[in-house]
Image 1 (cartoon, rainbow, N blue to C red):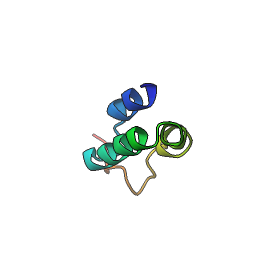
Image 2: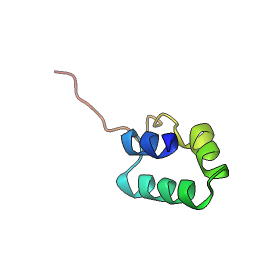
Image 3: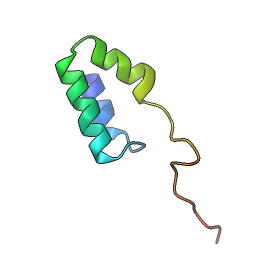
Image 4: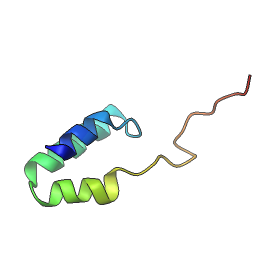
Length: 55
């Protein structure tokens, strides 16, 4: 359950990515959450973040 809440709150993945992670967690009840907390909750790399102009 905690993994699903974490996935829903995570904004570093697109909505499609969050759906895929949620399915992995539901289909693999032990390995899915472990994989999410070890691999899925990563910070977005600089190439994935939008550029923000300084004002």
